Length: 151
Length: 487
Image 1 (cartoon, rainbow over the protein chains, first blue to last red):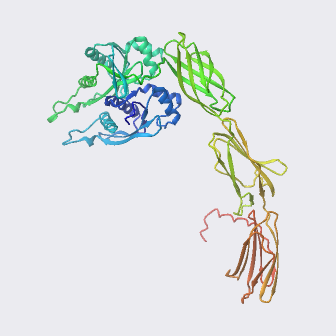
Image 2 (image 1 turned 90 degrees about the vertical axis):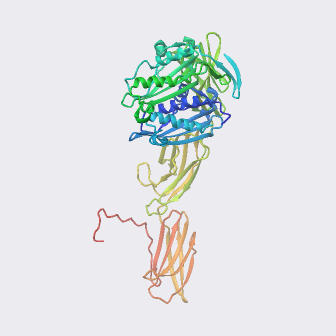
Image 3 (image 1 turned 90 degrees about the horizontal axis):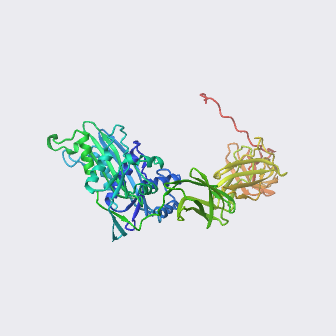
């Protein structure tokens, strides 16, 4: 992982029932990863253009030739792909389930993978203090936890 | 700008003097959101960091002219276009993903800063707040106004906005003011030396290139300008088999050159598909008796290939096609022939030939050798004479079959089908078989012979008086249509 200097984040594959989840999670992931200052990050616009050009569907895996082209064109050492499995609120409690993986553009191997499932009540310390009531706040918190496992 | 060295290579510290603020991307699902959020962010940042701000209202023409449809993201070419047109060092993208004015107001807002020369994200932040986040004991402090909450969110969002940005100089990507909107080669798989059409639509943020050449297989092919950003040309596929990536060489009016990688490759394939056929029941009897009724062919691709068309053709001895099976795409796992012709009648007994052909996407054709198959619905001829002498039964057997006998069996049994003696063997039955006589009256003997196509001949008789029965395949009884409650 220490050899990775620059990464590209691909739009997350939204398997939840909330249509906006893909954009919300992808943008928060990008912002939080930038804040963590672990890697240089390629802007999403270039990656979306690349997907359009290569006719790649969101969630589709990339072949070796595409990975090498990303490496050559954008100088990215790895790409990050993710799935949103759950993104909803049940009885006022937000629920989120995400998986993410980092794939080397050089070897095509997975070099990091994490999965996380949380709800707003997981953060209660005492007497309802710490409870997260907004899905977006929970997303930010969960993504921070996910990114912490990278280092 | 300060240069310094980090573990990741040379870094440059940039102080942004001019920043463009792109319009807010609203993904909150709410239409009625305040329109001044970006301006408020710009005002607050400007006050703190003293740079020039290019506001969304100043960018309208640029966005229209360059057909920037996707807010919330920016391409490197667009970022560079902003740099050239407005002299900005950075571009700020903001998005709102939560906006709820209710009793417990909620807001979610994000920001990212893109360095315009590299198109790299250099800083980002995200803040999500609810009114309840400010509640202390006994419900005091709760924020109930969305305006107050959004002010607090903006304050937190830009609190740690850096005065300078570290940019990895080693990671700078190839500078370009172009974006490939569409590039295609047709066909994408071909044989060496054949013509291939190239089509390109290039979006130029400044002036378009003077000429464009396609680099493929170590050769340079000029493309012809067609207007509206389209360029077309015909190239010749490289002769050698392999995969060739297409690259574009752009000749600028000022004499500069620029290169762009397309994401497209051309596959040159000069090898016909390699297919092995294996068969089940090359000699078969399509008489629906349940034994060897069908010929099955299993085609197997020995080397991975993209198959376009395939076909199985069955010829009679005059060389006429009696049955053909054709398809496109992947080869079938197996193919069954039940002895019918193309008019769905039954073919006559005889020798037929099967030929397999297939063509890959490059146009290479493979034709298999003709394989002989035999359709035989005729049972073997069986003649038996039995002589009883000296407590022995001698069976003299005459068996005739054109396509060979697979196996035979002699069974001696009583009326209750208790078996007293059984002899069996592979191939043609011997001309003479012997069996001892048993002290039991009313014994029967059955001699069966199966040919290679699965047809059966049966000779059945009493050990004293014999009768010849050469069985024909039994017709299957029809299943009763309704339930028979009296069974």
